[in-house]
Length: 139
Image (cartoon, rainbow, N blue to C red; front, side, top):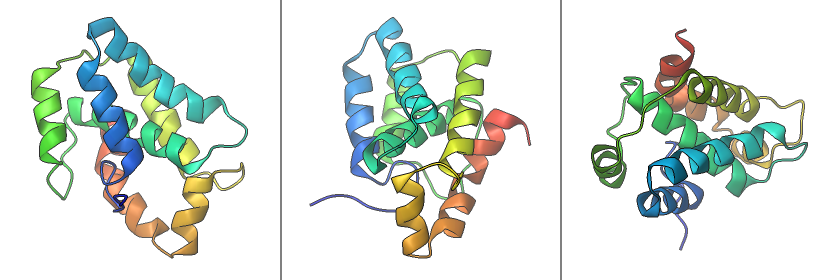
């Protein structure tokens, strides 16, 4: 049974990404974060699992930048961040900001966006992700 919630870590794609990151070394971890975000940013058509991973990666960057989400982060995420310190570079911040822009852009095919819009939860998702987005954009 899959996981589904409005938070950035409340879905199967995010949980899969966290699992992969836990198994990665320092350079591999950074590369996987970049890969998750650039896949969504650079694709003409983004499927839901890819955007779930990208949003989770961007939210991890946001947490490292001091995001204070309304809800507590998943205990697995907090544990991962404590055990796997990584430095947030300007490149990662930029990728995270572009990921959030792409996630909420209905102009290009984005299954993740469509699914949230269909169930009329897009506004709630945007609100839940706002602290992470703000942490990487400074807005």
